[in-house]
Amino acid sequence: MNRREFLLTSASASIVLGAPAQTSGTVLYSDRTVKLDSIKVEGSDLWVRSADLPRINEFELKPQGACRADLCIPVTKELRNADRFNLTGFARRIGQSVVVDSGVWSFGEIPVVRGTYYNTRVAPDFAVPDRSGKIVHLSDFRGKKVLVVTWASW
Image 1 (tube, rainbow, N blue to C red):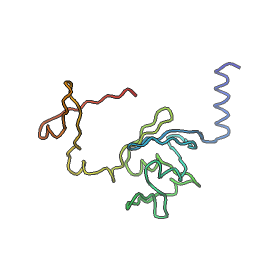
Image 2: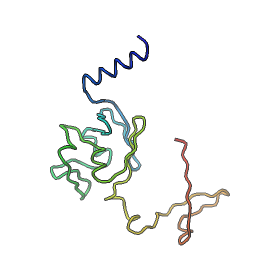
Image 3: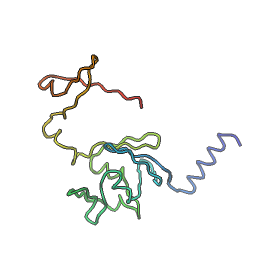
Image 4: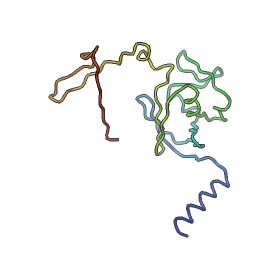
């Protein structure tokens, strides 16, 4: 059997079985990288174990909804399935951005808990060395237009 026949056969087998993909994956949220050993992917939905939710984004499922500290967001039945929770469905419901690539799901900030930037429109201060090695603070440029360019190798 050549590669093409194998792929067609295995793809049709998964369609016949109708079983969602059950694999491992990685979730990026805030400053966390959480490796999950049991996820289900159904279309664009990422289903995680409900028990993994606190590790991912500090939310915990309670009768009143998904709760984090004193914030509780009601969740619908469609977001729960036995011991699973639809993390991407929840993100869509609360307006959180999600990007997925190669088994890695990256979640943006949750609008409800994102902090004071959106209220004040003042970016948080940070310090970086300039080309000559002198430490420069963003606050040094208050009142001026600033373009911040970042780069990452990944």
